[in-house]
Image 1 (cartoon, helix red, strand yellow):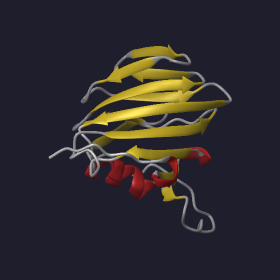
Image 2: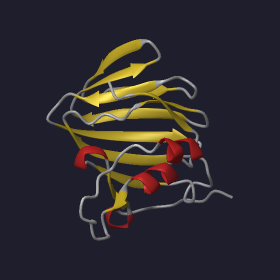
Image 3: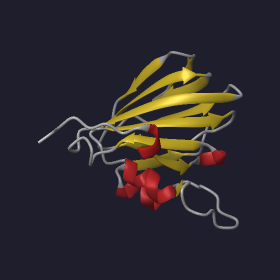
Image 4: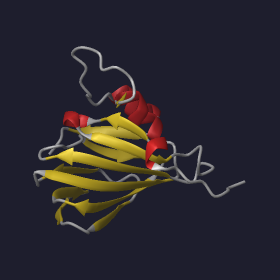
Length: 153
């Protein structure tokens, strides 16, 4: 049964992500009875995940601040501050941050993909191992229904 759930900023898990960015897990599938995952990226210019396809969930990105190029299928689009994009499952997509900094809200439905972020990233509340770097891991991605189909764009 779903119930109201609140997570104050100090309760939100902060993960080190690609290129030293941060992903805050705002809501996960445990908090939403599996219905969705909401995350917020604080990233810098050039941050770009590999071209990938989600087999389980649809995804929505809203660019709170900054600019990015987004690819969905064969289409390339510019996403500006305040812009939002729906990325349906089974469609290859990727993005690249083009501004100095960006604040990006991500919503996935249903939830569950946060496991991939947790296994690939590093919880910022733990000591950083020497030489640690976040790198895409195809085997971890596939475990959570995300298939890497190409390099970053």
